[in-house]
Image 1: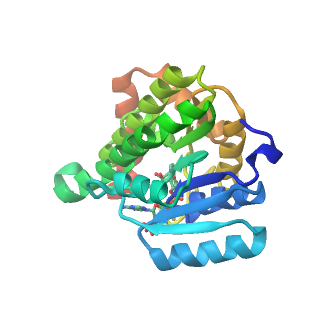
Image 2: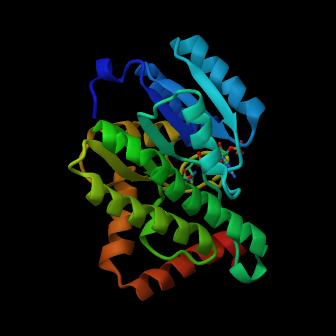
Length: 262
Ligand SMILES: NC(=O)c1ccc[n+]([C@@H]2O[C@H](COP(=O)([O-])OP(=O)(O)OC[C@H]3O[C@@H](n4cnc5c(N)ncnc54)[C@H](OP(=O)(O)O)[C@@H]3O)[C@@H](O)[C@H]2O)c1
């Protein structure tokens, strides 16, 4: 990763940028002097966030209101960036959504939409911006996964599976690019206090902690980072220590109560 001076006047594209973890990440990137492109569905909320970042950090901030779960949306964003003459130095694929409850009770279209957003758009955007980064021999892509990526999660099955895709995909692309000068890394938050997760939970962390972990992951070397020691321990237990079936049974007992209340 670059020094603070080298990051100046460079541009970061952050999805899901106006709220929660994305907002905390954009604040840190702006503090480093990076120009920003903020992406999410709610254009008015993006513009409010952009105005604040411009005022506080003096960086250029553009917004692009887009539903990334829609077919062709990542390509539209890439075309718009090219049309604006914007080179992407850092891409943070942070936008995401969750669905709780048994799959049998879920709206099939919402299940598909979640996978398209959490996994499809991440893969497509990565593939869209990576070639130019590799050609320049510099750049970084951070894909926000989840501790849920490390084992199947009953009652949030599509969410955990979509994040397992993000983790596996990112680890593989890291291996493909590790000698190119481009940094590719997955960051997995555990329960984090945002609009997505308003439940009271022990060990819950704040979006600022996750954003700090993202910034240090940008400077690091490995393919995957878990935010927080307790979360890292949990991913070790569920992802490595327990067999897949034991991890799934244990997760079912824990998550049933959260999802169904029994
Ligand atoms: N909070 C947690 O406990 C937790 C734990 C592990 C991982 N994560 C991951 O962290 C990331 C950020 O989540 P958060 O916790 O900060 O929650 P959040 O505040 O709800 O942020 C989600 C962001 O994604 C955007 N978004 C949602 N659907 C979108 C769509 N179809 N197209 C474009 N943008 C969309 C939202 O903006 P609009 O509504 O304006 O589109 C919002 O800014 C997600 O990938 C999430 O899975 C969160």
